[in-house]
Image (cartoon, rainbow, N blue to C red):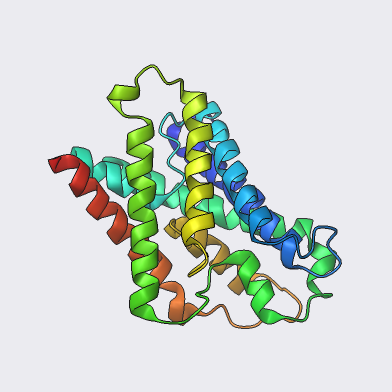
Length: 238
């Protein structure tokens, strides 16, 4: 089972299980961590990234992208797009499965939570203020900075940096983006992170759930991909 594709699947599964898990803990009724706040959510996502990278590495993916936008950025940078067809389906499937297991983990809490918006927020991102242009720019810029940060962390000039230390630094990078820029859209910065769980929300028999807001769903896919492609071009030509 150990392979790059399985590593991307399992790493993304862990990322979403832990990342969406911290959101569920903060938002769902009768959770012991309810109302933990934004610091708890952004920290939980940062740690989820670190553990997702370790898992992906351990099970066959030396890349540990866990994110179609990251895969696209490096494809644009080096001109090799072959990994897109392999990694992206695995990442989306891992994200979907992570969201399903998170749903099962918090199973008794769904019926206690009457706020449909909070239920959806456990699975997918939503803008604080709905403005397509501003929301797109936020996700574009956040993803651009994500790619720039990853490339900088693993730059040849930092060749003495061990891979596991790099994983911690990527977690800090995501934590920083969440704290500084996540208040506008919830910082998807990862099409799989939003699409896979949104599909799970749509399909799962969650008591009292509302619509999955497919009207907005295109943006946390398109904007991160655009930001990543731009970052890839930036790195390629500089």
